[in-house]
Image 1 (cartoon, rainbow, N blue to C red):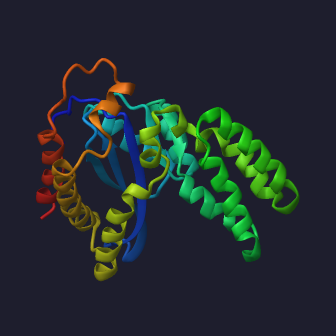
Image 2 (image 1 turned 60 degrees about the vertical axis):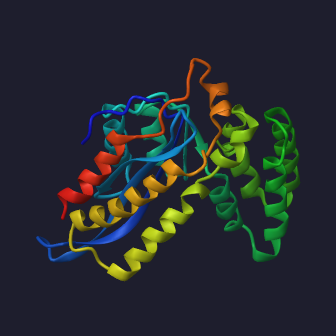
Length: 268
């Protein structure tokens, strides 16, 4: 891998896709996890910070992946956004100890799976009230009211909301400008759709290297786009959580870009 990058990365997204990869030794096809890490650099720009293939999406796999990111220089992480994979949450806690943000969009979708279709509008509307609160204190009050409202009509949703409240509303501890950007994994959806589209064409990858090569090629392109695009979060807003910043850091990330390009080239 490349030399460590030096700048802080306050926000990190961790995501996994399950892909089919051929096991030539066992003469079978296995489901493996494509692990990808994205971050928002202290300048407010997005970047791709890591990629790997794991045998399974487990706590051990995620722990090794995150440790590699830290070993290469990942620092200053304040919030990690992901879905609710229990092994991933434990790996985040044990390796970097940052606050965890459970994806709000995935949570709502999961909750709709616990109620009949005719109750979807009620449950969706109630949960959206919580996320529409203007601050953390108000969100707690709204959540309490929603839990009371749903206890009779959707008791499981009410219980799960109570259990997940702190993780769902972690984003409210940050500047309000950041909220729409850090409360879900939605910023990754376009990239995930493109990986899925290319995987549909491939069908079954012949080996791990082929999967990494395809994904890394796409992610290098994505990283280049992000570096020249408008900042994902303004630099001034970033200074609110990183007050020690005295000047705007460079948007260029040669070490990281080189790491991804190296992966893509080494598997050709």
